[in-house]
Length: 388
Image 1 (cartoon, rainbow, N blue to C red):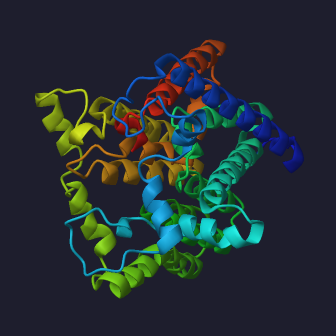
Image 2 (tube, one colour; image 1 turned 180 degrees about the vertical axis):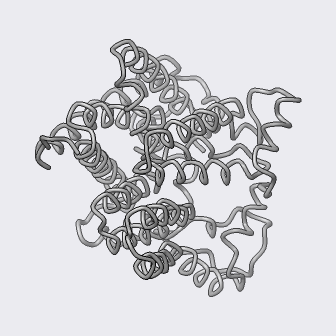
């Protein structure tokens, strides 16, 4: 525990400054790309760059899965007998779109605007929470570095967009914050909400159970608190009920994945197959296999690094490992980088490793800046492989 801790207010202002700076840079990169290619078709996208400026800006925040979240917010889940002939919105969980819908009447903004504001507020909350946790454990310098790495994550466009990513990231970080405080009930509550935001929210039960095992002193308490981990499955129960009511199939949110040609496979089997048939993109241009494999490799190295830092970091290491294994247990590379970018312990581990020497800090900032600019540029160009 650090001897001196910053106040919540101090951390908030640091997080807010980093958040604003990163978003200004992101918008600047997006507009620069728009200027350079204005008047030409968008590569891999649906919006040509000869559109009005406000539509070019809109494309930065409303892409790909945004349409599914918007359809849920406007019309609810599609009411039709289950089938996989089309890509229905059953695969998407309800918390984010319904928050956008419920706040529409409260503050008088359009649903898309509400969703965009929820994403921005969620990302700021995530930065504050991760800064607070690291500040308590390792001090203010490392807390600021962690917030910097998180604010300038290469997948910043994904967390800025009209999607559930930033909300899920904030709720996931809330789970880890409450685990640090040994506030088990609040951790389960945050995990339950996370499970309503994204299906992978159920995996937060893994760090919760690790923390229970490590901190609870007696078996009766361990067993009682472990049983509460069922709360992390609330999202599956709720969506299962919704799908049963509207489609007749309570597992429609899983089965509809076949419409995206996604099938379960042995972990990393798709990576092994790709090594025998190298190509830049896969799944019809919706994924970068090399990027997905690199992200998975870095995540596994992060697991090893965290595991060696002591038992306090085992819950985070276990969470990263189970996510990487399940993300790669598919015939598709789609979404793997964003699954890993949604893991709060990754940012803490990278900051801890980076903080060892000034040279590492400089190297990390240079690499991070290049990846940030590159990813933002590809996103602005409408490349599907980075927008999924």
